[in-house]
Image (cartoon, rainbow, N blue to C red; front, side, top):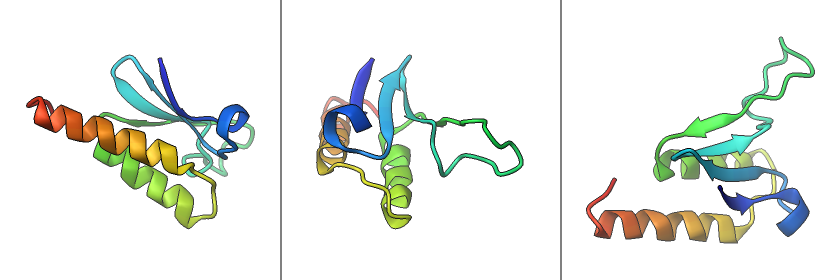
Length: 86
């Protein structure tokens, strides 16, 4: 598991990890459904661009996403493209 952002390490209000080949925004407040109070949903992205877009939404609603999370994800994406992976 790779951790990109977490409240206990870098003051982020989101927790973003890579697990089992995909990215997760754990207990995502954007994904939470008012119809299910108390339930915490996780956003899953199967590509880095989808997670970057999702994190942009968090920033737009006032959440704190550390710049290092964006930088690491962009760096990984660039490396994947250079290696011929998508």
